[in-house]
Length: 221
Image (tube, rainbow, N blue to C red; front, side, top):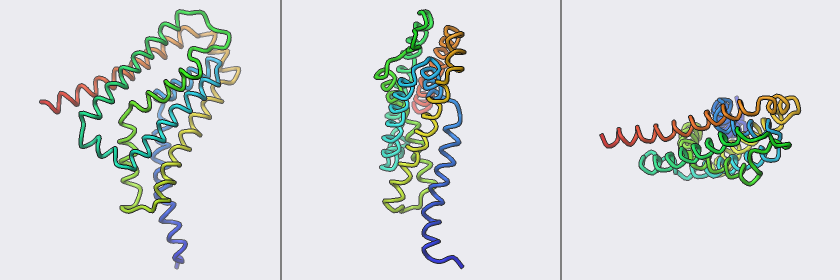
Protein backbone atom coordinates (compact mmCIF):
# COMPACT_ATOMS: atom_id res chain seq x y z
CA UNK A 1 0.00 0.00 0.00
CA UNK A 2 1.54 3.39 -1.03
CA UNK A 3 2.75 5.59 1.77
CA UNK A 4 1.30 9.08 2.23
CA UNK A 5 4.37 10.92 0.84
CA UNK A 6 4.18 8.77 -2.33
CA UNK A 7 0.51 9.67 -2.79
CA UNK A 8 1.32 13.37 -2.37
CA UNK A 9 4.09 13.17 -4.98
CA UNK A 10 1.75 11.43 -7.44
CA UNK A 11 -0.93 14.05 -6.85
CA UNK A 12 1.68 16.73 -7.55
CA UNK A 13 3.21 15.16 -10.67
CA UNK A 14 0.17 13.70 -12.44
CA UNK A 15 -1.43 17.08 -13.30
CA UNK A 16 1.94 18.43 -14.48
CA UNK A 17 2.48 15.42 -16.76
CA UNK A 18 -1.01 15.92 -18.21
CA UNK A 19 -0.29 19.61 -18.85
CA UNK A 20 3.05 18.77 -20.48
CA UNK A 21 1.49 16.20 -22.83
CA UNK A 22 -1.33 18.52 -23.88
CA UNK A 23 1.09 21.39 -24.42
CA UNK A 24 3.48 19.33 -26.54
CA UNK A 25 0.55 18.10 -28.63
CA UNK A 26 -0.12 21.73 -29.54
CA UNK A 27 3.53 22.77 -29.91
CA UNK A 28 4.23 20.01 -32.46
CA UNK A 29 1.50 21.30 -34.80
CA UNK A 30 3.25 23.72 -37.23
CA UNK A 31 1.87 27.22 -36.82
CA UNK A 32 2.97 30.81 -37.12
CA UNK A 33 5.67 30.53 -34.44
CA UNK A 34 7.22 27.58 -36.27
CA UNK A 35 7.11 29.56 -39.51
CA UNK A 36 8.67 32.68 -38.00
CA UNK A 37 11.53 30.84 -36.31
CA UNK A 38 12.15 28.74 -39.42
CA UNK A 39 12.20 31.78 -41.71
CA UNK A 40 14.72 33.62 -39.55
CA UNK A 41 16.92 30.62 -38.73
CA UNK A 42 17.07 29.25 -42.28
CA UNK A 43 17.73 32.78 -43.50
CA UNK A 44 21.04 32.65 -41.67
CA UNK A 45 20.27 34.76 -38.62
CA UNK A 46 20.26 32.46 -35.61
CA UNK A 47 20.46 35.52 -33.38
CA UNK A 48 17.23 36.93 -34.87
CA UNK A 49 15.56 33.51 -34.60
CA UNK A 50 16.50 33.27 -30.92
CA UNK A 51 15.31 36.86 -30.40
CA UNK A 52 11.93 35.83 -31.81
CA UNK A 53 11.94 32.82 -29.46
CA UNK A 54 12.59 35.14 -26.51
CA UNK A 55 9.66 37.28 -27.63
CA UNK A 56 7.16 34.47 -28.11
CA UNK A 57 8.16 32.62 -24.94
CA UNK A 58 7.90 35.86 -22.94
CA UNK A 59 4.34 36.24 -24.23
CA UNK A 60 3.73 32.57 -23.38
CA UNK A 61 4.85 33.21 -19.80
CA UNK A 62 2.56 36.21 -19.53
CA UNK A 63 -0.47 34.38 -20.98
CA UNK A 64 0.12 31.33 -18.78
CA UNK A 65 0.36 33.55 -15.70
CA UNK A 66 -2.79 35.44 -16.68
CA UNK A 67 -4.59 32.16 -17.38
CA UNK A 68 -3.85 31.06 -13.82
CA UNK A 69 -5.22 34.42 -12.68
CA UNK A 70 -8.46 33.74 -14.55
CA UNK A 71 -8.08 35.83 -17.72
CA UNK A 72 -9.22 32.88 -19.81
CA UNK A 73 -12.52 32.98 -17.94
CA UNK A 74 -12.74 36.73 -18.60
CA UNK A 75 -12.27 36.17 -22.34
CA UNK A 76 -14.95 33.46 -22.28
CA UNK A 77 -17.35 35.76 -20.44
CA UNK A 78 -16.46 38.84 -22.53
CA UNK A 79 -16.09 37.62 -26.14
CA UNK A 80 -15.98 41.20 -27.47
CA UNK A 81 -12.69 41.82 -25.65
CA UNK A 82 -11.22 38.61 -27.02
CA UNK A 83 -12.39 39.43 -30.55
CA UNK A 84 -10.81 42.91 -30.44
CA UNK A 85 -7.46 41.44 -29.36
CA UNK A 86 -7.79 38.73 -32.01
CA UNK A 87 -8.56 41.29 -34.71
CA UNK A 88 -5.48 43.32 -33.73
CA UNK A 89 -3.36 40.16 -33.97
CA UNK A 90 -4.71 39.40 -37.44
CA UNK A 91 -3.96 42.90 -38.68
CA UNK A 92 -0.42 42.71 -37.31
CA UNK A 93 0.16 39.42 -39.14
CA UNK A 94 -1.08 40.95 -42.39
CA UNK A 95 1.39 43.78 -41.94
CA UNK A 96 4.18 41.28 -41.29
CA UNK A 97 3.14 39.28 -44.37
CA UNK A 98 3.39 42.41 -46.52
CA UNK A 99 6.90 43.03 -45.17
CA UNK A 100 7.93 39.48 -46.09
CA UNK A 101 6.43 39.82 -49.57
CA UNK A 102 8.42 43.01 -50.16
CA UNK A 103 11.59 41.32 -48.85
CA UNK A 104 11.14 38.57 -51.45
CA UNK A 105 11.76 41.10 -54.21
CA UNK A 106 15.05 42.27 -52.72
CA UNK A 107 18.50 40.71 -53.13
CA UNK A 108 19.46 38.00 -50.63
CA UNK A 109 21.48 39.56 -47.83
CA UNK A 110 24.83 38.04 -46.93
CA UNK A 111 23.59 37.27 -43.45
CA UNK A 112 20.10 36.45 -44.66
CA UNK A 113 18.53 38.90 -42.22
CA UNK A 114 14.97 39.75 -43.18
CA UNK A 115 14.47 41.06 -39.62
CA UNK A 116 16.89 42.45 -37.07
CA UNK A 117 17.00 41.07 -33.55
CA UNK A 118 14.77 43.79 -32.09
CA UNK A 119 12.21 43.46 -34.89
CA UNK A 120 12.30 39.66 -34.54
CA UNK A 121 11.70 39.92 -30.80
CA UNK A 122 8.82 42.29 -31.42
CA UNK A 123 7.30 39.99 -34.05
CA UNK A 124 7.53 36.97 -31.76
CA UNK A 125 6.16 38.83 -28.75
CA UNK A 126 3.39 40.83 -30.39
CA UNK A 127 1.95 38.00 -32.46
CA UNK A 128 1.81 35.74 -29.40
CA UNK A 129 0.57 38.52 -27.11
CA UNK A 130 -2.22 39.38 -29.56
CA UNK A 131 -3.51 35.82 -29.71
CA UNK A 132 -6.08 35.49 -26.90
CA UNK A 133 -6.71 31.85 -27.81
CA UNK A 134 -3.41 31.10 -26.05
CA UNK A 135 -4.97 32.30 -22.79
CA UNK A 136 -8.06 30.21 -23.48
CA UNK A 137 -5.90 27.16 -24.15
CA UNK A 138 -3.86 27.56 -20.98
CA UNK A 139 -6.96 28.38 -18.98
CA UNK A 140 -8.77 25.24 -20.15
CA UNK A 141 -5.72 23.00 -19.71
CA UNK A 142 -4.94 24.32 -16.24
CA UNK A 143 -8.59 24.07 -15.21
CA UNK A 144 -8.78 20.49 -16.50
CA UNK A 145 -5.47 19.15 -15.22
CA UNK A 146 -4.94 20.98 -11.94
CA UNK A 147 -6.97 20.09 -8.84
CA UNK A 148 -9.81 22.37 -7.77
CA UNK A 149 -7.63 24.08 -5.17
CA UNK A 150 -4.02 23.57 -6.32
CA UNK A 151 -1.10 24.35 -4.07
CA UNK A 152 0.84 27.51 -4.88
CA UNK A 153 3.91 25.46 -5.78
CA UNK A 154 1.89 23.37 -8.21
CA UNK A 155 0.55 26.47 -9.97
CA UNK A 156 4.04 27.98 -10.27
CA UNK A 157 5.38 24.66 -11.57
CA UNK A 158 2.61 24.49 -14.22
CA UNK A 159 3.39 27.99 -15.51
CA UNK A 160 7.15 27.37 -15.58
CA UNK A 161 6.54 24.03 -17.29
CA UNK A 162 4.77 25.50 -20.32
CA UNK A 163 7.39 28.27 -20.47
CA UNK A 164 10.21 25.70 -20.48
CA UNK A 165 8.43 23.58 -23.09
CA UNK A 166 8.09 26.59 -25.41
CA UNK A 167 11.76 27.44 -24.99
CA UNK A 168 12.89 23.86 -25.57
CA UNK A 169 10.85 23.42 -28.76
CA UNK A 170 11.34 26.79 -30.42
CA UNK A 171 14.95 27.13 -29.28
CA UNK A 172 15.73 23.71 -30.77
CA UNK A 173 14.12 24.79 -34.03
CA UNK A 174 16.27 27.94 -34.10
CA UNK A 175 19.46 25.87 -33.79
CA UNK A 176 18.46 23.01 -36.10
CA UNK A 177 17.08 25.17 -38.91
CA UNK A 178 20.12 27.47 -38.88
CA UNK A 179 22.49 24.65 -39.84
CA UNK A 180 24.61 25.35 -42.98
CA UNK A 181 22.83 22.81 -45.21
CA UNK A 182 19.44 24.30 -44.36
CA UNK A 183 20.73 27.85 -44.94
CA UNK A 184 22.18 26.92 -48.33
CA UNK A 185 18.89 25.43 -49.46
CA UNK A 186 17.06 28.50 -48.19
CA UNK A 187 19.33 30.96 -50.03
CA UNK A 188 19.02 28.93 -53.24
CA UNK A 189 15.22 29.27 -53.10
CA UNK A 190 15.02 32.56 -51.21
CA UNK A 191 12.37 34.35 -53.27
CA UNK A 192 10.01 31.41 -53.58
CA UNK A 193 10.27 30.41 -49.92
CA UNK A 194 9.84 33.99 -48.73
CA UNK A 195 6.72 34.45 -50.87
CA UNK A 196 5.32 31.18 -49.51
CA UNK A 197 6.07 32.38 -45.97
CA UNK A 198 4.34 35.70 -46.74
CA UNK A 199 1.28 33.85 -48.05
CA UNK A 200 1.12 31.59 -44.99
CA UNK A 201 1.57 34.47 -42.54
CA UNK A 202 -1.14 36.37 -44.41
CA UNK A 203 -3.40 33.31 -44.23
CA UNK A 204 -2.87 33.09 -40.46
CA UNK A 205 -3.76 36.77 -40.16
CA UNK A 206 -6.86 36.50 -42.34
CA UNK A 207 -8.02 33.46 -40.41
CA UNK A 208 -7.79 35.35 -37.12
CA UNK A 209 -9.75 38.26 -38.60
CA UNK A 210 -12.41 36.05 -40.23
CA UNK A 211 -12.95 34.00 -37.07
CA UNK A 212 -13.31 37.21 -35.02
CA UNK A 213 -15.81 38.60 -37.53
CA UNK A 214 -17.80 35.35 -37.67
CA UNK A 215 -17.99 35.18 -33.88
CA UNK A 216 -19.11 38.81 -33.72
CA UNK A 217 -21.77 38.21 -36.39
CA UNK A 218 -23.04 35.13 -34.58
CA UNK A 219 -23.20 37.03 -31.30
CA UNK A 220 -25.10 39.95 -32.85
CA UNK A 221 -27.35 37.68 -34.89
